[in-house]
Image (tube, rainbow, N blue to C red; front, side, top):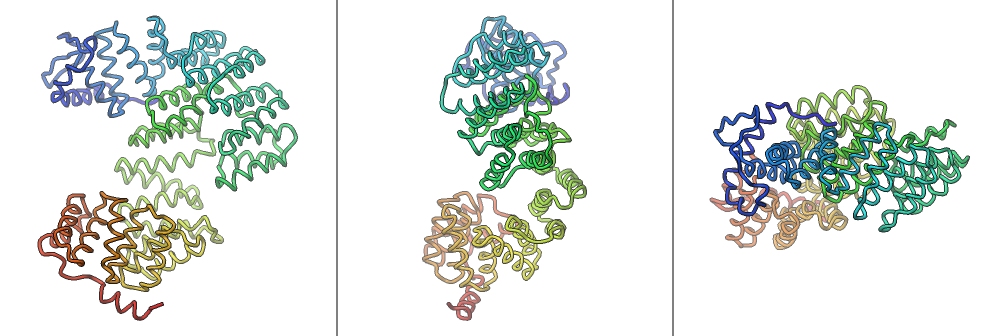
Length: 595
């Protein structure tokens, strides 16, 4: 499903990776003999400009290294190369299959899954893949046969069991499908999946009253799952209980601030539309269970297994919007923004989640250091809908991160100008614009934005911290600033940046012992932050701990401070702290605003 690099680029990249392994020769002693038996045979059409001969051990280790780096395309290519030279090696076969699946090369994974079955190896992901291929072809009896060949472990049992139920549904065996689901015994977390898929099956079969009973069971277990709430509201409506359906959606909105998919269902209910089932065909049903499990696995780590589930889900249903977004999120956590973009663009154009996905695409372009592409992408979204504040905030924050404060200010203002009135949810927009304006030196306007944000969300710790810190840094309203930051620390006692602000306000007030105490606590929370280390060095100097001060400044230097700060730190290392900026102003301001 996912696009791959061209063969020439992929081979070039693989050669570069192999070169890295010259330093890993000593690892060979730890590798299974079957995997590292060497050969001088050269694969057809494979050049070696580096002069390195092809070896099983080299390709195997290259595959392992690529796998550790979560580069599934490269890892799969290396294992495939090694497998071609040692086709009887079942370990290589399993790794090649799994990596092809994780990379989204599902058609190739199907072939390797068949090889695993022919070799007599039981691999539940191979079963799912073979069954899924038959499901896509509409061969539901063959899908059921492929899925029925054994399963081990809770995850395999649930995945294969629900998938089998959808194969049986495809053959019109509804009651037998329900029996398969009811017969799945496992941990407590089985129950919400079992009840939800019973609901989908019964609703798709037109057995609405039975579907409602199953939906109520699912809803009782998990009222925070979007898919559970959605199907529950739909089935309630199909049974003529629209009022209860809307109440369920209201409860979700109150707890989790809503979701576009549920807003869409609400609109259909309000318009009196016939509410369709969420899942209507077997392949989509199997896709749904793989998405549900893959998304959970992805949140808990296990990226290789998670991407395998989600890639197979998209193979079964290329329009599976939630699976595409979940796969994009996994790639983002793996710090692979290019792969995240590939996944996110699969969200269908008519999906209510499309704009959310496109905003994430813009953010991922920025992660790739492609500012122009990110900017153009998000500007197009905003031009299409200037009131889309999520897109406005995304673009403004990207510009601000690149210190393009003037344009960021304009973007935030453009979004604010679309509002008829401020609501509590708009405080981030004012907060972000306030930051841009403060960086532009427009302090009065910045302060007005921060204070308006606090009117909308009183005691918001991020706003309190930024406003308080800014006031301290300018030697303004220090008593008020101190109370703001104390409040922020009470609300976020484990936030090292906010604790640092408290230490710094004590420093600017000349209360150096208290500054040291808070800054040491901030360092415990954020030991690798150069600014906090620099601040602690200043505080140590002022209490006479000169050696410790220079140690902290040296540490700040080594942690990569901002370019403009580095000369200041180097000067302090060489000459100590000559002046204390703002101290006199702080004392004067305290006198003016005491109490």
